[in-house]
Image 1 (spheres, rainbow, N blue to C red):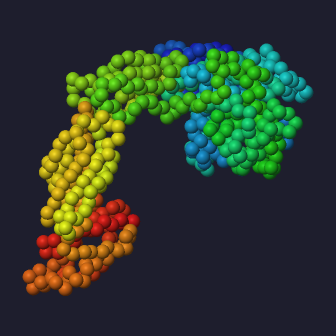
Image 2 (cartoon, helix red, strand yellow):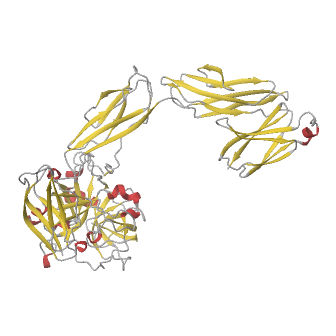
Image 3 (cartoon, one colour):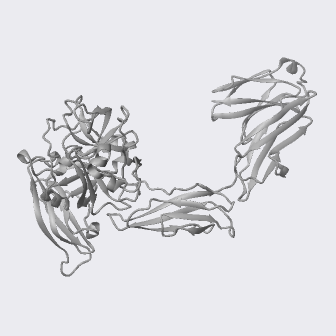
Length: 610
């Protein structure tokens, strides 16, 4: 019901592409090329559903003799449906996996999911996880369960606790398929994923059911694959905080969330997990138990959970016991003996470094992961000088003072000798360190003798190496100098637009502009409600209205002014009254000043619009 193919000769021409089809002639894999197997000529193909396969080789632009040749060493005939091929544990589980969410139902876990693969060896399938080492260099270590590899001994062909030579030989053609998932949460369209062939056994220990492999032909920099972190914690992960990302029944990727994780009562080598959503089943074995920080703390051994029996717990071999028992330290952290490492995230890949470059003459470092078998080429604009690091993963730059400084982009081209997609270009935008005004505080704002007005302001810029400040008043230059303070004395009092900008070695930053109005004048107003929403009511004191010469002056002008920009948002010109109900339709949420002009006098009140 399914066929796996192991090639002992795999010599494709440089321009050749090989495709594997099932009986229905549906493409089961992406184009396979000889360049995908840089470090091994022993190639295996993940089992194809059905009882026959079609191998199609196409040599582009070849009109002469055929150049490619292949030889098939083994056919692995399976007597289960492809999607039911699982590990060799005999477990009382139902075949339904309908209760397990597809990974696209929890897209916040895709970063961790990119480290997970289904794999096949010796006719059995399981789940495993690429894990990071102390160097963060992309060495392709793959963690899974011992019993998924140990399949050819024991009673009725089950595990016998020993990985023999036949099982070791099968690893040379083991198949690993990453990013094999549905394209949306409830979808039936499954991606082809990316398949890699061949692995070497690095560490194994049956006591905690752990195996550490190293992929011979691992993913490349552009393949969208990540490496999970790990943690040697001895305390159980937080309740409702852990997840298992796996290939139940060898189907498309699923995700299960835990309700609790505790020590297994019968054997301290294992955690036991119960679930808040989903379960695990055959084909899930070897899947990592990820803590709340998406670090591996164990791998699936066995259990009894199923969609019909979700209260049963499952066992996971503890990573911290495997550390010494299996000798994981020899491979994952030989020099530092770290207690934990974080994930190596290559998709999406970003450049680490500051977003703002100042003009102080300092140097700035930008970096990407320093990966095995990769070369690096950096590009910077002419406003920067490369001090060191070209052709490495770490670049040091300074400002080029001989050219005008402006915002720009730093990029690095990373080329890998492994994988399918072997080159990526990563960019990072930077801005010039022009100073910005973080805020302005009012130090004096009072009426003297009822009609004179003093105003004092202080600009806050934080630590931006500011050398001077430029203050404007009603659009004209008022003062310039090292002082962050502004002071003015006004008679008669009137509203004014104050602007301030800061200067440092990079130049002059953007101006912050504010409207200030005196709290004094010949009449008073109230504005309600405050905050306002749909409308506001402006009331002029009754004494003032009674004294107005209505025959000479018959209008009141009311303006709504944005506090920060000083822009007039709305203007109403109305007949005399002591009470105005005004609509705020179309006014955005923010802080405003209501300015009332009555004859030659102006007064104002601040208001918040919600």
